[in-house]
Length: 146
Image 1 (tube, helix red, strand yellow):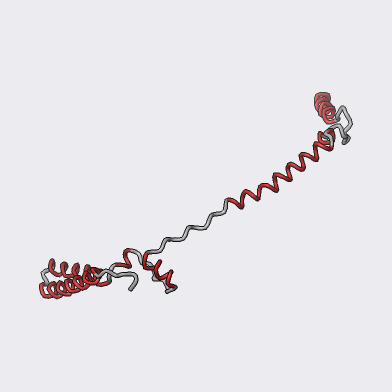
Image 2: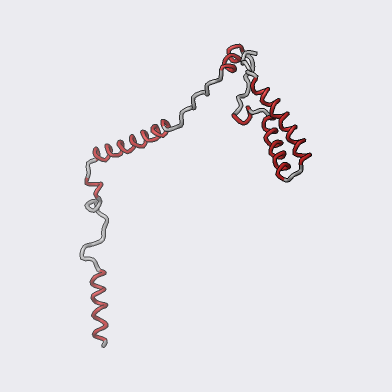
């Protein structure tokens, strides 16, 4: 049995011992074999590519948005040097009387459905008044130069 255990350890010992000496030599280094001129050219090309890369990122910045065109009234005001009016969206342009009249008429309809006649008539008259005055105001044409 001692004979069988000694054979594998001898095989492992033979595999560990290299046949050539382990010495750092110029022959094992691939860069030493190249001429110096080629290495310098590669180094310079890498530097130029790194220097050129940030210039491309500067061009990708977002451009400023174009100015929004002003309506006629604000264009006239801008030409005269008068302060501009704030431009309103569609909901802000609707008169508060028209908005309120819709709610009041809806309440009047609710009272009519529930058979509360007196309140339905009161809210109906109030809603009609708000609707008429709101429409009257919205029918006026507002000229920007006034």
